[in-house]
Length: 65
Image (cartoon, rainbow, N blue to C red):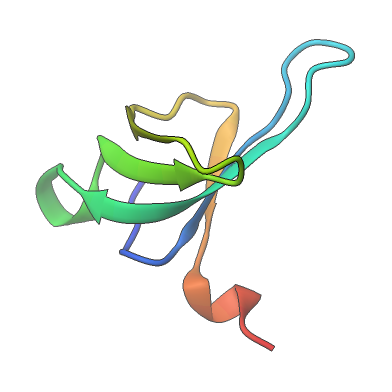
């Protein structure tokens, strides 16, 4: 998985009733845009994330109107 600054990281809920989590990739720390990613979540919290198989990246260009 690779990302660029400004892309969206989406983590799907893996259990019934668990919510999807979305955030903006602020920085990539791995080689060539790989994880870990510094993410600002929609609730304003920030954290370093090693995304699992339940996650995907939405390129910033896809979210522009």
